[in-house]
Length: 399
Ligand SMILES: *[C@@H]1O[C@H](CO)[C@@H](O)[C@H](O)[C@H]1NC(C)=O
Ligand SMILES: *[C@@H]1O[C@H](CO)[C@@H](O)[C@H](O)[C@H]1NC(C)=O
Image (tube, rainbow, N blue to C red; front, side, top):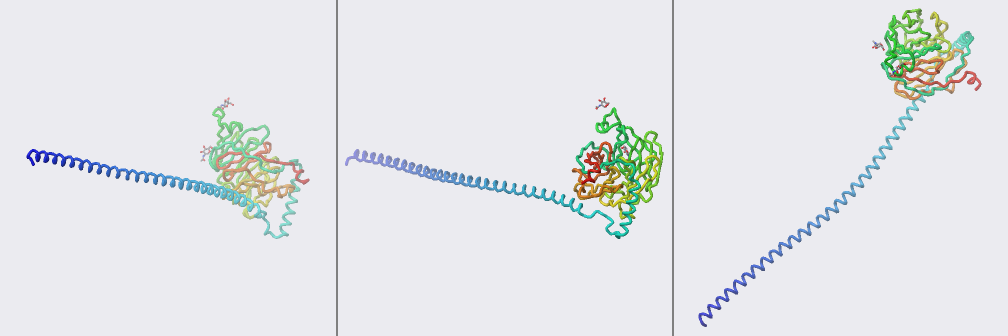
């Protein structure tokens, strides 16, 4: 071999070697990249799978959530249903309590010996006959129709009333249970509107009043003098002077109505005149109805009634019949559950109890107005008016 040839061969060999080397390098690179790409593809696939699985989980989760929400709705409806049923049950219990109260024999005298009771009845009948003269008053209460809230003023307890004298429209306002001030309004409208140009007249009395049982008739105020057990005063509202006074024997030891503990003497006016009610501990706390002479405060007559002061809140007289409203400390509506007719022509029958429409709390007072046929009441600081449903007495008698 020639030197040139061997040089060439060497050159070619080297060339071939470097070519082969390059080829090998490129192949390795390609393999490497292919490997990386495969790895990336694998990871992408895995990622895809993960995303799918997350989506599935998300779907499952939201499905579960929807299911739970539906369940929650069902539960909510169930709870609502239960609350409704509890409310219904509470109302039923309230009605049942009222019913039980009604059923509980409020008629006293049950433990008085029969003979004695007969004697008492006979005596009362005689008494009644004596006073049954010259009255053509025939109004009988058959129901309490509606309630009107007139105003909210003054303290929790008190009383307000309208002078029942023909032609008078004056309204009197006694806030609280002891004071020597009375507010006089020219009319119901002035009282309701509280118009500053029609400010009430402040009347300062010579002696303070007590309780919620005041009566006004023909410009005179009849009231229980505070600080005395049973002194009744007749005071002229114009001159603010005492025109008469009397002591109501036996009164003042017990509140007239156990639910209105500040009132010992409840004075009232009806078609027949002036009355006063008190409770007598010697009669087991029963109410005593007394007719007074409006003029000189003379005692005309007294009747022991079968109506209890226990759980009573107020009372009023219509045509010589005493109606007593009862309530309870634990709610329920007030109702007239006892009556006593001095003429003995109305008996407490199936028509009792007479329920009052819903109210706020215990009535502090009720004042009957013969012409309006309304009760002016005080109900936890609200001045309210009850419209009364009445009948003629002979309609009842003919039944
Ligand atoms: C008496 O009544 C007046 C008028 O309603 C009132 O302003 C005053 O505070 C009352 N006084 C007491 C001691 O209750
Ligand atoms: C108050 O009463 C007077 C007299 O009745 C009347 O003229 C006036 O318009 C009333 N004012 C208000 C604010 O009601």
